[in-house]
Image (spheres, rainbow, N blue to C red):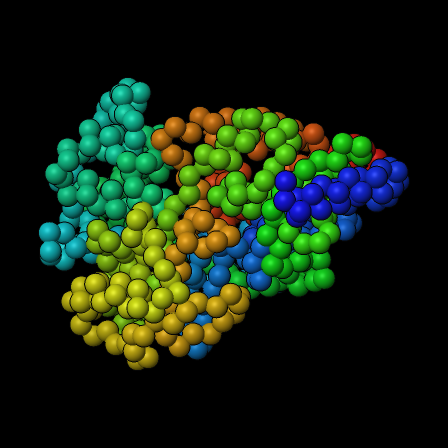
Length: 488
């Protein structure tokens, strides 16, 4: 046993003894791990309920997978962008309003202005769907009947389309981009999660280009999503501890308090713990074997994350009339609200790269820039194409292209959660506790450990709306536990 481990064990037992009697009378201590949107929401809401909360964050900034990049007077999101990715973003919209912030359009999703690069030629995106199989009730029923025969979403798509159909290729790219993972590694249950809804919409629009519901307005926080993060951190000033990656969790045998080791001299003890960090990083934490039940540990170890990545480019020469988005086998593009920033969006293996290397980013841009210029001959790059390194600051202003690869981010290790081949059922089994419906694998533990994060939300996993809802729910659950124990 190394000296550092011996020292830690000594401290844990020492702390247990010191706090054994105090724990019975002191105001209970609440600790949240992870200052992303879910953790910030949890801590803030508990604070408004009258509790004192300490929040620990591994990075030297808050926000997690929300990070706005500013270019002069304009901006675009390196991380989470669209509020309306959630089917019901009410909690997030209410939180935005609570801070006096506003929502604005962050662009539109109009498939008529989307182009494909297929077989070396640029063609209208919807053209590929005109000859696709009809999304009829009978075709849907056939897929449902054969669900047990499909190992993955890719198998289901092969059966539905036939391997060579252009609409098949487009839907592969769309599902890979939306989930950040190749359809070969996604559960066939995506039939009902997104696949059928997306395909039916594109098919129907391709046969009726004048229909009125083809445009989806996308919304973000006006001024950048990082403004919501700044508002939350402002209310928690003095209670957020940065550069504190969690290393170990154990429970004190004598007083049942939870001991958190951050690799510092003094471990932190707490009565209530909310784990609001991604499972992709939580599984790096050494957790006392008996602390978390086996089914929950298995969930933490197995949850799959996407590999989405972005490169943002300041541009000129494109407006609302000329703007087009592009989908290729490597990436897709879109413009921000004022058409001054173009996003190159990557997924699957293409989303894993060294985003701090200007040379790597330069090579990635050069691979696709000719196609973009073919689609937009009027495009200009007023500041050149010399990518710079991203900074860990919420409101950084850039004057060159900048990128991020979320899988290569040490304290994210992925963009957002998705459903892998073998874990759909585990992540869709619900139970009720503290008057709240929760995923069974993220139920509370002994009334003292709670979970929050986009991955824990039942209806809108992998979204900002789901992250906020999970934080609000976790705060209510902790509050009800404390009410039950008459601490409030």
